[in-house]
Image (cartoon, rainbow, N blue to C red; front, side):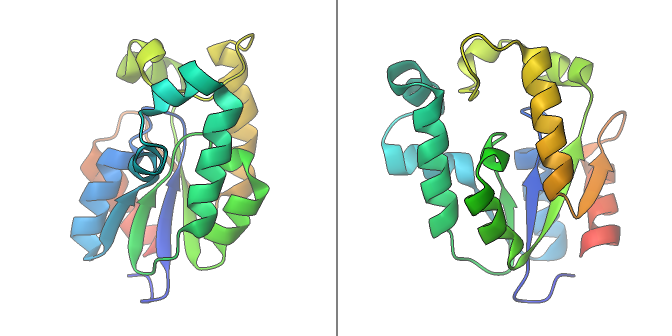
Length: 168
């Protein structure tokens, strides 16, 4: 288990299982759980998709950075939004007392799990394809990760157990 000062931070693409695995991991490791997408929505007073639709993807990333940099918790599993890795400042803040776990899935699995991306509040440039976004983010996830866990063909319990074995 992480020391009482440590958190486990989950990063990865939408559909990688950050929120789902996060809840299971928090229960299994007797830690608290926080989903930063919910904190962002609460802070902004609107859904992620609404932020993107009304103010653009940069606005979502800005609010996300602010929320992450103000997050001051210990003994938590933290499920981040997929675009958290665009903020060097936020990721360094999280790294100070956390193990960063990249939940790695393929583009095909992401598409299968998500379905209609237009409803997900995904922070991407309007001219950017999902393939380009996937490739761009994968580099950032790998850069910040202390541990990479492949989610392909694994249940949420199997992913959770691997994280507990390696990071907790």
